[in-house]
Image (cartoon, rainbow, N blue to C red; front, top):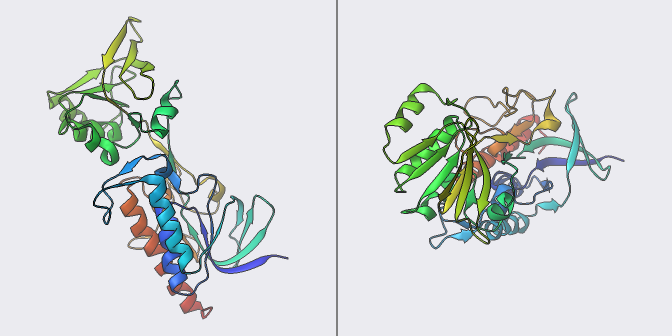
Length: 313
């Protein structure tokens, strides 16, 4: 027997939990599936200092626990499981959890987020997950490195933006670029090259992260000369892109070329009636906890209005 719910939320970061708070307060009795990383990317973020309401800052995992408790306070049912299959072809949206549970949902809020791409080198994940000086978001964490020497690896617009942002905080920013050219737009390249405290290392690959509990430097290798250079630094920012966690929705929801869900202007609506998208699954520009929470709110309000117009609730 399939289970029927008014509002199913897939994902548990700031977008998912905020959608749950609003949906639960509207008496939609939401059911939220956390996915394989309950709390999303913030669970690997040590200190969050740019979210309103936390004047002294807060650790990412603790912040997500607060979000979850607030959602549950109003009646959200949180399930620690994955949704691994969907069928959106009928008026009722069918989804299946990894344990085989079949759910028929009047509305679905997608808040599956995105995952940062990593280099895959030794110590990278350890440092990133334990506050050791490795991050995939300069806007989130750059402030902690004010006055310190840092590096950014990447060659696209995101890497250029992060290097420029850090150059206003740090005395020296090393930019590690794999080839002899950047993929960033010409205007971003020009801005980077004009910054005197950004040093670009062309044809270079990061070979090693130095340090035990915290990063103390890196070793890079020039792919043409094979020369290895050691650079002492305190922060290492990986800016080689993100992958939206939207694979299970391919073929159903409209997406851009990289897999971000496309929503209609001024709303969280997708191309499927009753399915709404929020957070980093549809936002490749801002990717902040506060903007994700805002779109989660939008998705819940859109779902509530949809159900009202259909006369379901």
